[in-house]
Length: 249
Image (cartoon, rainbow, N blue to C red; front, side):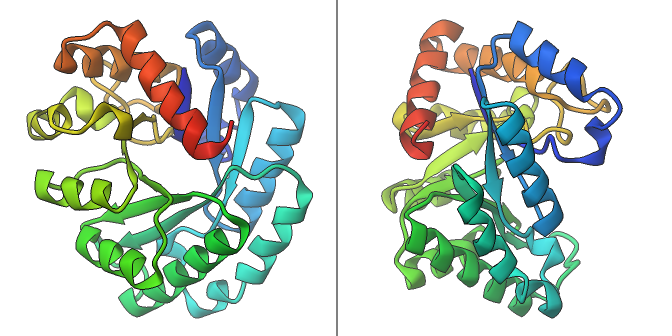
């Protein structure tokens, strides 16, 4: 099972990192896309990937960090691409939920990430909290069509537009308890679905209020399979094939 979006570089994993990895492996997790959200955590993700080959680093600057001085650090992000296998650019995108960063700065930073992904032919890990329409517009403007809208929470109509552009939709713990999202999930073509944890955030039903971790992806897989009326094994084969294709694993 591939966890297509996780933040093992988050300080919440410092105290029991090795135990978290052991639990993930016992649960059947074979690969984790380990996403940085600034220069330091992107560097940490690369270091973890060198130590544990099944932890696949993604590098980028989260939109909440989109201050002007951090946009200048995209040069440092690009420099990290020389340090070994990088599977994706991100986490990037737009976040209008609390507007921690000015929206124009977020858009400028997103454009920079897209340019980097195009230059190095890498998929994007796209964050779109209350900002899906603007993200779609920017991706169309920049004419790039490779990546995943992670932790998808939009409408069915937005999902259709995203899929038509060639993108995948990532579903995590919220799918296990959101009836609205479950109805949308039923209508998504299975060849466009990815599963993720977004750990340490957004734990699934049964673990809500706890720190999320990669082993919990099995709960999401089980519920997702039930929604689609297929076996967990069958759905795992589908989503792992999708992840392997997108991230060149």
